Image (spheres, one colour):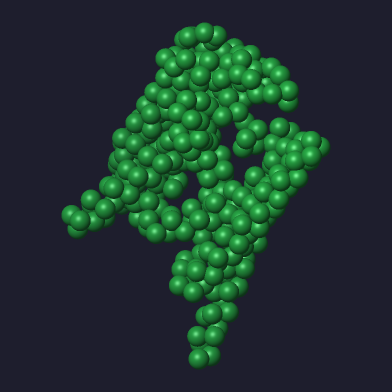
Length: 313
């Protein structure tokens, strides 16, 4: 009898958790589908995706299904994920503050439940929009890439919502870590663009990349010092790495779309944020993950050393 009651209670809690996830997941899916519908169905494709835009001799073909334009299609899924990242964190932060003012606690639903709820309309809606509206419609393979990018973008965008609601200052410092990891990602992933620039005598590109890498490392060490000084909680290396992915592949493409497009609000092509060759991109991710693990180990050793000094004192 007691086991039956426990089972019923667990089932009730599970249903409540899924209802809460639906309250979050459906608006998330609505936001992404709304953006995709606007970019592919309403906006001028020649502006949003820069059809036939002159990008110089290095990129001679910018027709609707060229390599560079095709990358803009799936990058739209990540830009939409960036919008989810910012807005979902803001909403959860606000709900957390409102509940606290009321003397109540607020805990967002599990991010994976929210993602599972949002995934269903995205899997149906993104291909339907991209394959049926405006001109040219996308073939299935390209529509699938847009869908996959949107699903991955939303999956990365949701976990920070919990920190925003419960420990917003931890999210601030984790974001600082993310900027540092993102700098390392760019330095590794955009190496081929550096080689192309050096071949044309643009040595300034090497200087800029060098400063960027040094700045990224300095930022990570600075955050490490602040964490040790304030005896702050140390996030796991996976959280630091994911923060870097969020900044590099969601937040920065969104900022590019909103701020750095001279008011045209076009979608960036992929090689502004990813290597052209996926093998090099994989190496970049591995380097960033290793750095996240290394900086986390350093922070734990510093914390252990401080604890030992405190005991001896």
